[in-house]
Length: 307
Image (cartoon, rainbow, N blue to C red; front, side, top):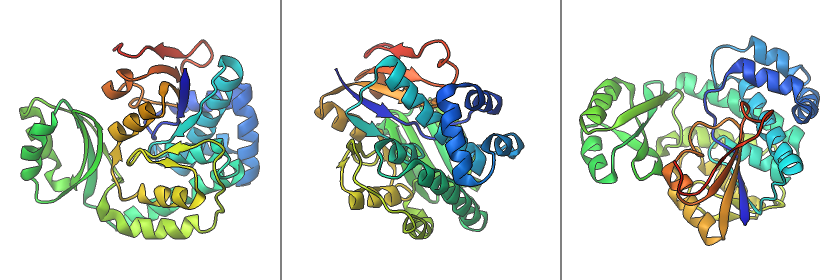
């Protein structure tokens, strides 16, 4: 079987579970010590003191550390040997460190800097905008829903009936009601919003952030979550990282590219409530899910075609 490793997008995570994993698991403890050195403070303490915000800097860095520790564990204990790497949204930063495109210490500092710049930007810009995710709305019904909005951007097409739409918060309640009337189901609303062409300002600021980091050619090809392109050149990789702020997630394109590359197994390493469960994922791959709750026992394995 040909495998790829997937570092998931940022999703809600239990702080106590995350902190416990970082402190007790040997692979995580080693990474945690390296992160402490890179930051100049104790990440576990900062995580414990962080505000109840999944986008807080210590939370993002802790998730990065956990994802990479889980990937290392999957390799050394379960025999994972991926040929390709995917990192949708936040996961692209773990992909940088995993492939050696950026040293781990630099990746830790990069995640910290991105989180701070993003928080400051959205504190003053696009304050009336959110990104809403919903399911059970087929593509042929989506246009009618969007026609009722004053303004919107598409932030993601994750499955045939799973969409992410960026819109003005004042229209959110009405949009959610329209989703329900169409037979759909609202999942969650992101603040700050993400992955929309309207956010060209944050892309410009992130270009300055990334200018402070030298990227190398990744040791494994990285498959883009925006269009399925196979990235091996540092400049292409840098462009893809920046475009992630203004281009939507197109997971079906990523899946199609992976299948064309012969991939039939995915190792999903990190806290994940989405990508390992998508129909387009489960129908196309055997899935080895290695997350925080299962690592001390065994990963949950989902065979292609199973629910």
